[in-house]
Length: 317
Image (cartoon, rainbow, N blue to C red; front, top):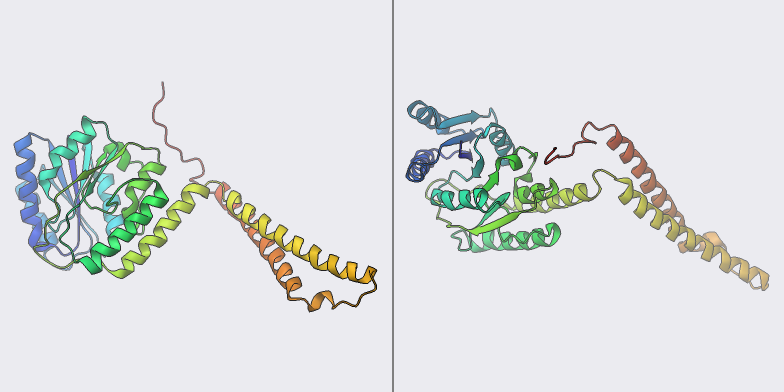
């Protein structure tokens, strides 16, 4: 099979049928063998009924997954990726803001230009400038700096992947925003970008909110930390703990040395315990020790983890 299109959705009853008809037309015009996987993320409207109707009329091309509750886009994409059988996997949102006309060029970049992943870039957007476009620019600028991936729109819903990419990454929480970074961590380094059309929302309301913007930064820091120190946490906790402990130890020595020098010179000096620096030094030593021990505990947890030897092998000969 050439292409699997994964469409996560939540309460998009008005746009599901027009989107499928558009995808169907593009696929037939280009002679692609394909499947469209609709993942209904706990919708409370008629979305699932429409998916069932499409399945009845086109059983070979339409597949549906229905969640009992709203688990989030990452979970929807995770199960969609598991079900995908196409050589190239395309993801797009169900709100008709992503154009299926982009599919042939995205497919070409994966199959013929040998990209592992291609992310869309909605260079011209029709969203609210203050509440969505501006936060998106800040988020993407930060993401580029942290991930070292020069993508202008990392969270764009329209992406294309080699099938082995989606089978090699695990999505949870809100990690769908960082699929290119997850792919890079997994060893897929040929990641490209393509300017794509952004269309105005015709139906429904946006699911974007400030809570997602804040959570995005927290998830980014989590991913960065896990990619750097997930396998060897002692390298982080041990290093920071040792530095803080040594700083406290040096401070204690300095405070004690000043007292000894004053005594040897028969000069009156305040008690060591009357100096605030003494207590700050002791606190630093305690914190350093705790961080060092936290590194040991993290290493023990990692050693006993079932994922400790989970590495991806590209080829064997």
